[in-house]
Amino acid sequence: MYSEIFSKVYDAFGWNYYPESFAQLLLKWIEEKGITVKNMLDLGCGTGILCSIMQEHGIEAHGMDLSHGMIAMAKEKYPQLRFEQGNMVTWKPEKSYDLVTSTCDALNHILEPEEVKAVFRNVYSYVNPGGYFLFDLLREGEAEECEPVELGELEGKRLQFQIRHPQEGFVTLQTDLYEGEQLVNTEKIQERIYSSEWIMEELRRAGFSDVTCTDQLLEGHEEHAATWFVIAKK
Image (tube, rainbow, N blue to C red):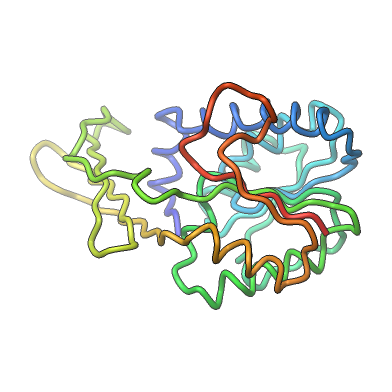
């Protein structure tokens, strides 16, 4: 789970670039599909940027995240929107949605396959008939190991970031906070790589009738994403 420190890092160093670019892609996808999306829920909403952009385009958007730090920041940045803290494995909203999204490989943060299955069953229960669950997924080899990279300073302290592979099929994102040369905080975020075939099969088992996996969300689009986009229709 992202701590308050990591939430500040996420916001301060512009890691909102992905939900910002994904929002534009998502709006084009909705237009090309010719579907009606009156409301949506973003699971693992982070600091709320995707919800904000979708709300600006006339879609009632709600957000949920496991991290208290992320939710606190989302509420501070967008007080007019609804954000809740919860665990997508068990958390249920009070209403149903035309579209449920989850980006920034939030599903990969769930390390136990049985809990991923539970998420799929849970989301299916609150997606409207004919609605969609759309999320991204890490591809094998996408998050390559890297040596520590200097990010800059946060509140007068120096930050380093690195990606490690502690064992096959797992990825660790590590952020180290230094005061001078002294290490004062280390945060490790673990992720698990799931095969697209397994993900698609479990979505079907959860009840979704039409499931696709692609690196091109928009048909005929020249660019191929480094991640998988998984689209499940109820």
